[in-house]
Image 1 (tube, helix red, strand yellow):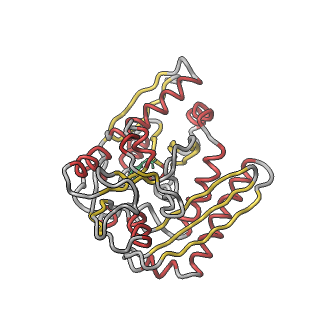
Image 2 (cartoon, helix red, strand yellow):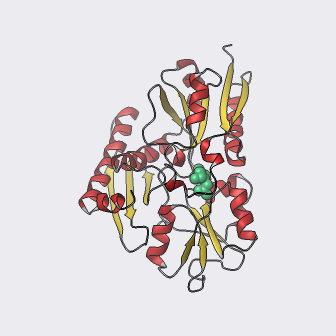
Length: 314
Ligand SMILES: NCc1[nH]cc(CCC(=O)O)c1CC(=O)O
């Protein structure tokens, strides 16, 4: 059927929000399109009791969706760019990156309205090594406690009193209508976001032109340039989303800047590199320049010892 598109999606509320978002945007541009959902469980949704970094985090949330596309049970998969492995398997591409939501991390707490206000030794929930490394770099006295599950599950565990505060992506909270729970949006000097955080990407079968044409209006150039730089850096450092790596790019006119960080999980070391370039030429050329910027920041992090820090993890 030529006027149909099937979206493979995980069943979590955030994944469903993202699939609904893509459906709504598609219908704005193609009012007669038939959009269907194919809801799937992924391995990452099933293993909830172990830190993701310990169960081979790479691609845990993505693979089942790709199988559905290979089997022609679905046409596209909608992902949080933060969760997409740096190398896609053969036969797939990520042609569309949508407009970014707030990329920052957020502190959620019933009693404390900022990191500064947390008492000595307070218990903070996160399973992100990136959040852990950067938080301990500014507050080495804090106690980090594992926290996994969907956003709703994590909030429930905070409400149950297991933590003094937890860290979540602001984007996820906003999308689920939970913005009111944000006690503090963390600035990027304190907590640099994850590569791709806050951006939704759409994966297709490689070269599936009918589908890619339908999706084109959802492409957001600024977000694509920023996320391309961030992901190129992460790829060059051989990191997935379960490593203490942060990467965040900004575009202002033709100036693309990228900051990258690699930390030790105890927060004692935190390497920081920032660089800026002027974009020139066609869209494709600019995307290539964004990736070059990512490589350059990764190389500088390497020359400061990033490999040794990342090697300690395995
Ligand atoms: N790793 C889970 C995940 N993947 C994307 C988001 C939030 C939304 C986004 O970054 O696009 C979250 C939750 C969180 O980190 O709090």
